[in-house]
Length: 278
Length: 268
Image (cartoon, rainbow over all chains, first blue to last red; front, top):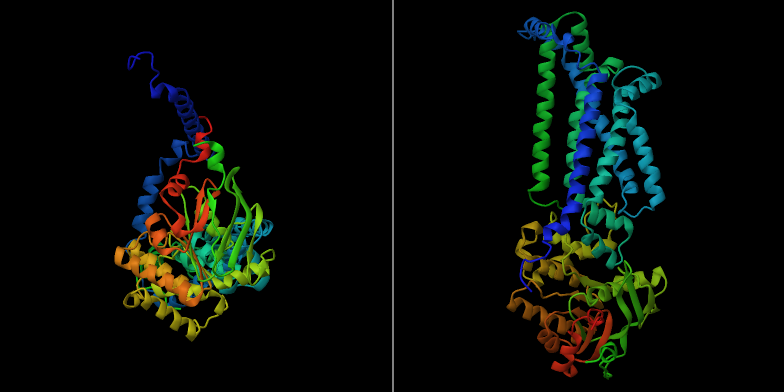
């Protein structure tokens, strides 16, 4: 046999499938781009005349709101604490409900598949209502103040954290759990001793992210009557006190940033520090 | 060698000592349409070390995982001397409480300390939702098990900082911490350096001879199997080709057990 003569190259064997794969990828990319373009057009983002005065107006607004006016800072303490409390309590409530629910929703944590599906559907349903709508509902139920904010954030966080938690649980290595089953441990023991410790850093990540989100959300909940810092900002805007509004926004920025620092420290301790003691 | 010869068992030489503590009968395991174990029958005596040998993919690990209940056979049964045929969840639970497994991939939790990993052997001594620490006897036994494998000074270090050999030692400590009556080991020496491997060999022999534990080890090295085991079970392509005393496992038997899978030869 002469090498190379009339021998189909390995590439030829793949070429047909390869071209088909390439074509499918190009089609998918083109479809995604078309969908995005249509969305822009429908939302009016392509009517360029509307941008004409935008820059000038924004510059004016920036000018009106500098320098920030901190003169009323003495009156911000209470609403700031209310917002902080609403965010923390809402996150804690959501996490406390989400953890057991996520154990029931995860495929590998021992619950039967039908229960997985019911819990997943329930989490999705709770999640699909935005926090603001929950806020309107709970303001109607329990009246004004931080309490409806806590309940609204708790409800939405349960749905969101439940999903993030069960996905984290499903990512754990099966080996340690199998080792526990091989020595006769119960499903609950496998969850508690093998799956939870492995998922803990991911659970903490989700929780920290959610706390940050909830502090911002607690601010906007002020709009629907759940009190707090958001109400101050909106009031300042309504009164055209732009310099005070910018000061309030800076304070909010400082609050969220300090929560992020705290979250980063917590992550470090979970990922690298000395192990937990039981 | 003819196909027929290869498919049939080479020899079944009876061993005199101790009644079998554990027995498998007509065991078959199929996964994804592929037969992993085919009609495997074997006995594992108490107070003796049984080595399971064979080429990669012969079904050694699967046999071990049938013995600890992680793999459910499609037919056949596992029977224990004390518990009889294991058919109910209760009898399996009873067996598992006396059994321990040294896993090939160690099956440790990387972000927990060596001590916490060994304590997992005591998972049934503390309610999973209990806020209290592990019971005193469990903490003492775990510390002793870590001292036995020479890792007491690193008890609080995270296991993902450990080398492969050190992880294996943690896995061994976890398996031995409970004082099991049935010890299953999947390549327990694979990542240990020679002096440690020799010590673990001595320890496992002592467990069998002195304490009467049923020891079943999957081994890759035949020399080790001959030196350590009382009995050898040779698997090839899911079938038992040899089951007899270790001294009877000669070079010819070894060649047969480690011959290429029969289904690869079917075209010939």
